[in-house]
Image (spheres, rainbow, N blue to C red):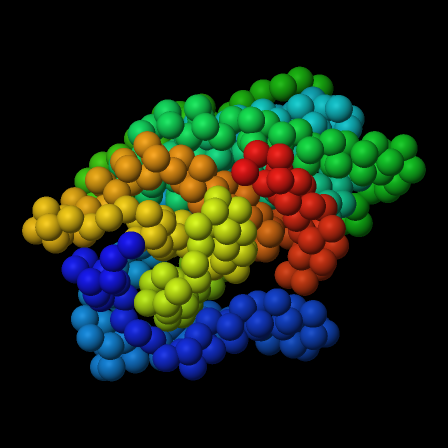
Amino acid sequence: MMAGGLFAALGPNIPAAWLIPFGLLLLLIAVMPLGGERLKHAWERYYPFVSIGLAALVGAYYLVKVPAGNAVLGHALHEYVSFIALIGALFVVAGGIHLRVKGEATPAGNVLFLLVGAILANVIGTTGASVVLIRPWIRMNQDRVRPYHIVFFIFVVSNVGGALTPIGDPPLFLGYLRGVPFFWLIQHVWKEWAFTVIAILAVFYAIDRRNFRRLPAKVPGAVVIHDDTFGLQGRRNLVLLAAIVAGVFLPEKYFIREAAMLAAATLSWVITPKRIHDANRFNFHPIKEVAFLFVGIFTTMMPALNYLEAHGSRLGFTRPAHYYYATGGLSAVLDNAPTYVNFLKLAEITFVEETAEDVAEGPEGYDRRAVGLLLENYPGIVVAISLGAVFFGAMTYIGNGPNFMVKSIAEAAGVRCPGFLGYVFRYSLPVLLPILTLGAWLFL
């Protein structure tokens, strides 16, 4: 455990007062939609200005007052551009794929659908799986769709399902870039993954079975369409979807990766027939909402992450459970990708001795060596950080990028979704948290 060398300036020492803009943005996201029709409409109209305004305030502080603040701000904005390019490209390309489903979904059929989505999330990412599957999920349940259908889809497909591979969830890809081998995760977390997915699906089945028997009510305003056969339109977009996933591994330099993703999205928009977009009720409102809110989240959370970097070593974390709950707790309210990176860095500082060669090579060389030593000597710590980031990203709408997008797509399709607080207090805390806690007790 070292205090100097590479770690003398892990992050700028940010006054705690600069955590307020981030907290204020989270509070507004949670409360404004609950404040009656006038406040709700006001928020829908002005949230872009609020988000950008708070981002500009924090950004200006970093540029003027923080040493090397321009580099910190530039890194955060680069991550935001990469994030929104991936999310946006997957949204557009998946919007050109129309999966036709057969008849009315039974509870058992719904469980199978979600399980397939959880597996698929490890192949095309939680974002790709969410955008491809959310519309057919709504269509196959439209006679009786309820808020819990959207919530459990977010739990399984948008988050927990993608814990097995670096493609599955953004924080795991960052771990891969820092030296975690591609197949290391699936070898070390498959039991925790299987337990968590099965437990969530068991709760869902119990709820859905009761709904199927007692509450077959039609959603007001929904158009009932039950196709007689399965079908897939927009097959050319599957190639573009694969190209976006492959683009994740392109170089970051000069925004080559992002340019390739946006090129795939543009091509998809051009070649997809209008009838497919109409069948999906495709519009840009969901990605617009994500883009505006997350530019504020990515920027205003910089002080929170830098505060953790500067003071995290004082926390005394030494056990996997410490890292699991700490990473998870912050992943629920911060974006889980930078949270993962910061706790991986904290584990390096705590468990890996710094050498003179590390100082000479700089932080990047040290990170890869330190991750290798963590995997060899403290694999439980890396497992805890990985699972905490992925699993707890489902605790709120802002824990992981696809969450808000799924909510927006569902609402655009006429589905009533729980608000920010309703999501947390009706579903996350009473359902998801006990499962995640039991899993930690069994496996960590």
